[in-house]
Picture 1 (tube, rainbow, N blue to C red):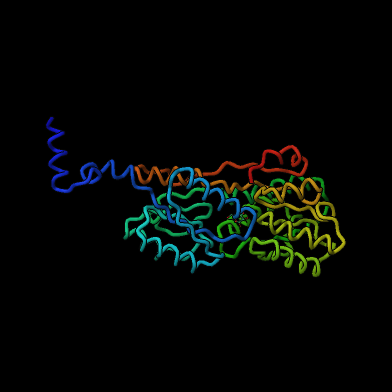
Picture 2: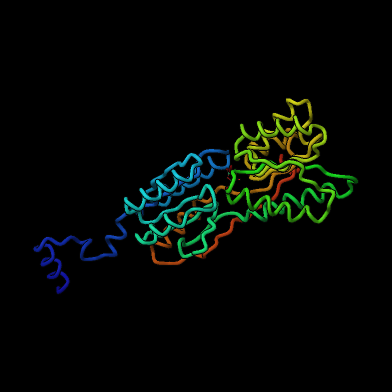
Length: 321
Ligand code: AHR
C-alpha cells in the first residue's frame, strides 16, 4: 500500500518510472558503441567488419561505425566525433601503433572507456584503454618461421627470402617481421634478400612482387607475405613471370582467409598461418561487461592454428571467413 501511494505521488509530480528506478532506465537504454575500423584493405578486414556489425545487431548494441580508409587522421577524427556524441564505449583497430596518446587522453577525460581490437597501440600509459583483444602477431610470425625452418631442414646452401610487409608502422607488420626473424636467425642459410611494404593489399602485393622478380628472378626461393591478400597478388606476379607459385617459390602467408584456402587447394600457396577476424562477439561481450561495471582482462588473446596446403581441402568447408 505504501509503495502504491509513492507511485501515485510520483506520477502526480510528473516523475517517470525510469527516473524513479535508475536500473529500469538502464535496461531500456541501448548501449551505444563507436567503432573506428582501419579500412577495407583485405579479405580479412571485410570479414572483421561483418563480424562486428553482426555481433552488435545480435547483442542489441547500437553501433556507430566509421571506416578510416587506412588513415590515422581519419581514425582520430572519428574518435573525437564519438567523444562529442557521448557514446558509451569507443572501440577501434589502430591503423598504426603510435600517436594515440592525445586522443585517448581526451576519451579518458570524457570518461568514455576505450577497447582496442585486432591491433594494439604502443602507449606507455596502459590506463588509456580498458582491454586489448586480438591475435599475438609475434607468435604468428614465429609460426611462419618455424614452418619454413622445418620445410627446409634438409636444404643445403642459402635460402633466399623476399618479404612483403604489411602497412608501415602497423602492429601486425612490426610484430610478424619480428617473430619470423627471431626463428630464422638460428640458421644463417636463411637470408631475407628483400623486404618492402605491400600495405596489406593484393594490388600492392602484386606490384612489389613484380619489382622483386625483376631484380632477383630465379634467385628467390621463398616469399613471406604478412597477409594472404598480398600473397595472392604476388602469386599473380609469379605466374605472369612464367614461374610456378608454391613450387619454384615457396609461399608463406598469414590470415587463413577463404581466398588463401582456394589458392592452397589450387597448389599455389604452401601455407597460411591463421589470424582470426571474428572478434565481434568477444567485443560485444566486453562492451556489455564494461557497461555493467565489470573489468575485462587487460589482454584477450585469440586462439589460432596454422594450415599447410595439404590440409586445405579438408579444412575449407569448416572455414567461416
Ligand atoms: O591487423 C590484422 C591484419 O590487417 C590482417 O592480417 C590483414 O589482412 C589486415 O589488413
